[in-house]
Length: 461
Length: 91
Image (cartoon, rainbow over all chains, first blue to last red; front, side, top):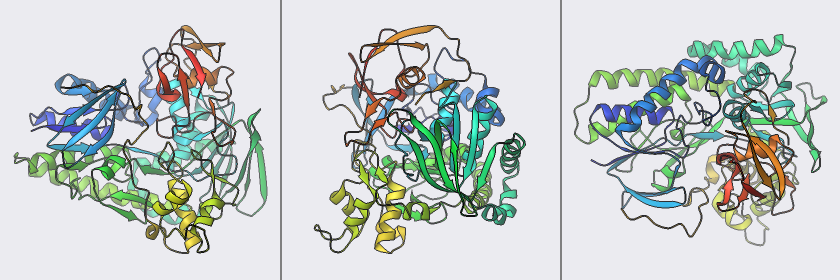
């Protein structure tokens, strides 16, 4: 049986571990040079790799994932620095690119563990040098020992907002403000459910309390107004409206921003896995059962790419998907192990639901954006241009769903394929059409899932 | 945009150039770090006149940190390690 696993984050590592234990040696592909996924990404050689310093409370978990990864590499066909840019389920083939060389990988079954990225909402001035995602701010610190600026403000919502602010302050950066767009009362209402998270919840409280003790300026229920600056100086400050409606401003030279995560599910899409809109998570997620099986024969999903669950869930889901794959291939698997994993996944799902209620995606921030705000960074498209395309009197006829709007306006057609603007664009369009965001559809993935050079030579096996 | 080196900042130095100007970086820097921790300020210009760009996601997804390297062509600065003698042009 030819098995391929895409991704070497926590989900991919535990999937491959389970496959190898069953005597299956997969082709294991990861875009990064050293695996670990984004959460447990290791710095390049030459930088120190002190797990305690890099991963904090997660050091033990990170080290365990790295150890498993390194032990598995020689037992599989390990292909780092390799992008899977297309998947053709009818031919059961992955198309890859590694250091300028293309290759085809045939599979009977594939587990896609493609991870997630930050979900962002545009703010006037957000394309300026000095503004990054929260994930980017964390990666700069974790893998390069760098802060995104000298005086940094963090904006958005969710656990990552508080974690990154804590990590920056702890590393000696001047964190000038943490601006959480979620009102305090919303979080308070979700508190009973959050207690299900045990240690995870406790850590969240610890970061918040630590930042408060340091006297770092914190705003909850904040509404961003603009990130100030210019081409010469980059970012110079950030303005917001506080919970009482008063305008506030603080000087800074960098802003990290993000509102939770969204799945990187382009390969599942190209594999023709259907998607459904998850209103709690406010994301489109590929359809799968609790074990990671999809309606597409031979395609399994695990980790944040299959719907946001976090790193702990990803490890469990990776192992679970591998067991499903083995079972479907006629291997005997331990029923007690699957039941145990299913129970752990169910308990984590209850905590995740509470987390989503504590930090809901603030769709109104996208819906209320001014017409002249830059919406699509790749194509230089402004909010008003998308709104105009949705109107009945538009010259092209109205765009009733997001892919039609893409054809009319180029929204999501650029180099990132709507990864960055997609979530906000959908809200802008839904508001203009006065319908539920699920009704306007989702931007379909297109091969190549990331830009690749056209004249790359083909390796024949 | 100016990246600030907060820790592990005493690594061996390497030299590269950006649009012909000398840049001093450290071994293990990505191109994005090498350029933005020096005085580059930005990595590219929006093709649509929306000003300078300096990357956004740092995880190879947003494609907003493209630069050109002599002999390598167009690369993502966030996902490419800087090396001694690299000749980089803004993307």
